[in-house]
Length: 160
Figure 1 (cartoon, one colour):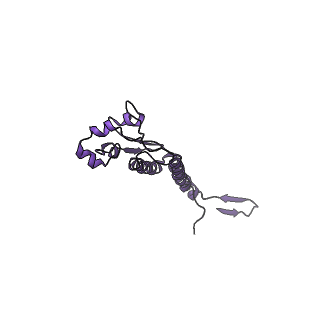
Figure 2 (tube, one colour):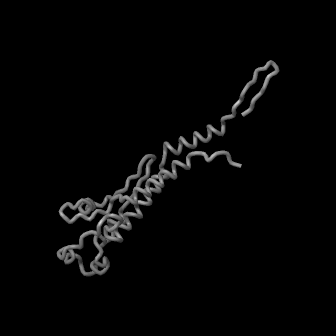
Figure 3 (tube, rainbow, N blue to C red):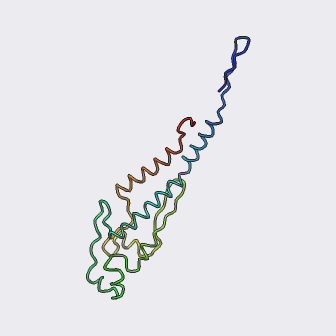
């Protein structure tokens, strides 16, 4: 900012707002597209779903999946019984490996294209064994990720 005082008692104030405009532009871009933050949320959720499979549903406030029925266990070929080690939904690990995420500017989608996934997620004809869910801890982490992203958009004041 520059102040010029003239000889006739008048004065003129000139404000250089380039730095302010740059900061506002940076903030606008961050607020319009939070894709990097949503990508981070997606990564967190992929790790959370993987943990759900490892712990067979027992993640945070969710209960462990109900054990396999003896008839289901008997249907597994002996080799698959040994490979899966008795773990539920993990004979081939196809479902576990199929989870994907797509981050956009305002959200993240997490899902699977495995045809039998909804049967297990919602218990359609089988005991429900949900593997895609958001816990209260997840919501806390998601909130912190988004808050960090948005706060990073604001300038921290003059820099030396």
